Length: 380
Image (cartoon, rainbow, N blue to C red; front, top):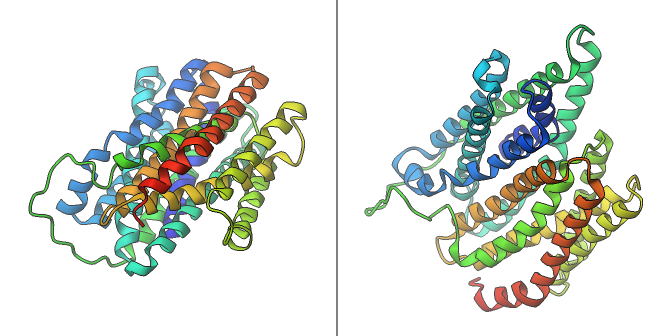
């Protein structure tokens, strides 16, 4: 299950640094149009959410997941056909939004239902934590895989063929392979049959959005939007590898440093580390300290906010809390990438300053509002 989550997330994150190249070179879009396309993924994430509870109760849950991933996989094949319609800006917007919808529903079913169904009640928090960490690793491994595939493809593509669009097609193929592998992994697992509820509603916030967690959602969105803006920058492959180093350090810190620390210290430390990495970028853009600090900070903040969402949820709301966290994480990244291309193309220092201000706003919001609010409203 966690490997399926990793592969599914990698299929999407490997397009973050590579899809804009295809959009510019093959589809002929400008930076503002690229920003809108990348941001439309965030809108797609929310579109099918209200149907999630109905679908997983009306139909077999693993089948719903596999169909969603199959739709995502099919969307990866469209650029290979060189359809004239796929070079039209409105069609590209719909195409990217469809990818967001398929990925969002697949993630909701996986995190809010399948992983929970396969675990004993006392293991579910640990299972959610582990699965989310594997998805977080994809934030580093996905772009690394996509950029490495482009570099390798550029070495073997004949010089008469434009290297950038052609090599990006190989990234789409790699994303397709990741989707198929995720489907195969889930197909090997047997899931218990669940009887649908008596009063089943087609539209519902169940397994979609935890309305009582809007404060946590907004605070998380500020952080992930800043991270998404950074991901709109042209970054070398090794930088994403250093982010993975920061993630590993975050796992060690959660285990040995923050296990008995004051509750709010982990988020504050993570936000301070993210802010420090941005300050380094503002003063010395190519410092090797930037990406490990960034990965460490993102890992600490993401891990703790996930647990906050779980503790905030009431009985039978665990799945809804997982979907809400996923939406805050993924939509913030997509919005940040879109904002980076739309407003700040060629204006790196201004973008870094705005990202820094977002992190400062997230820190102030957490210290003076969110943490106290969480302690008053938590249910576990």
